[in-house]
Amino acid sequence: MKMKYKIISTLFISCFLLLLASGCGDENDSVVVIPSVSSSLLTVKPITIGDPIDIALTIYHNKNSEVVFPNESDSFLPFTLRTMDIKQKKIKGKSYKTMVFYTVTLFQTGKYLLHPIEVRVGDTALKTEPIEIAILSVIPKNEDNPDLKDIVPPYPARANPVTVAIILLSIMGGAAIIYVLLRIFKKKKGKKQGHTYTETAIDPFQYSMNELNIIKTAYENNKKNAKQTYSGVSFILKFFLGNALKIDALQMTTREFRRHVRKADKVPIPSVRVMNILKTSDMVKFARGKLPGEKVTKDIQDSITIIKEVHKSAMQPAASSRPAEEENQ
Image (cartoon, rainbow, N blue to C red; front, side, top):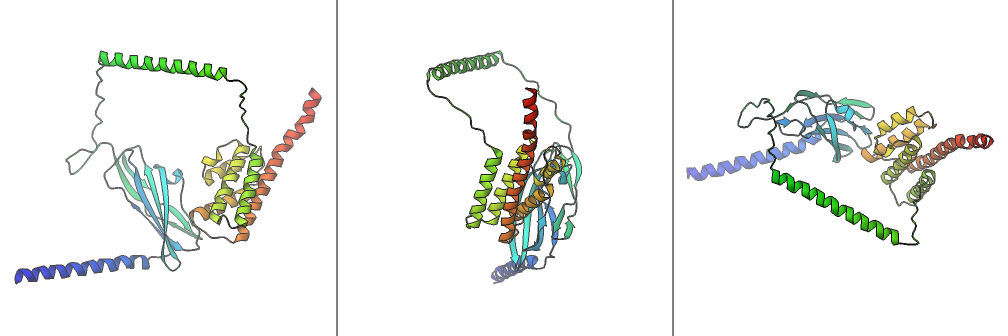
């Protein structure tokens, strides 16, 4: 009877603890401060040099609040930002939780401080607590207190003459096969008659105007939502202006692109109007902000006007230089 009583008591206590834990878990999201931000280290220690380090940034905010957080490697120095993932979850009513997962790395050893991450929610500026991260080079096994060990010198390679001969013969044989195949391919290509291939260059101005008109028509006919529309507008603006400035704008973040636009002196670009459209695009894509339809249509039309103005300014020097060239001839 005593054994049976102990088993029943144990089961009852376990069920009570499970109910208590589940109740506490539901309560956590209901008592959070809005707006608020926190960060945590997800990677299990110890961390060695070059390992990916996962950082979780948690932001609590209202539904319509604009949320801005770091998305460039400069904000994590001396660490290097490798990847970033964003997830959003509705908590209760108009309260939301945005999770930003960063993966950083460092190729140095020692104890380093991940500086506070600055976040802006609406007009409120927030920042997280710093995180101390220790980077080890080689972790000794079977020790309670792992310290740095000396790097083991490289093991001298022993060259086997037979292996070296086989490798050299394989390389020479492969090169001979490639040479023969190339000669055969050239002969076959030379025998073909009446086939000419021309490469058609894309006019950035015509391409950009056509794409923006397609995006405008699709949005007005409810075939694309605001997020899809701004994604296309942002791509076209960066494509055309990057071509005008001779930079690879499509691979840049909005902040990096802004530096090049401000420094542009040969091509006059309305930087304030361009950056307002790109910032709105980032807000819609990352913070999932909602905008009235008139604002979306206005930004599309403004993008068309900007491209026309930049194209006209770029063509004026070329047109004015033609009479001088004709006189010299």
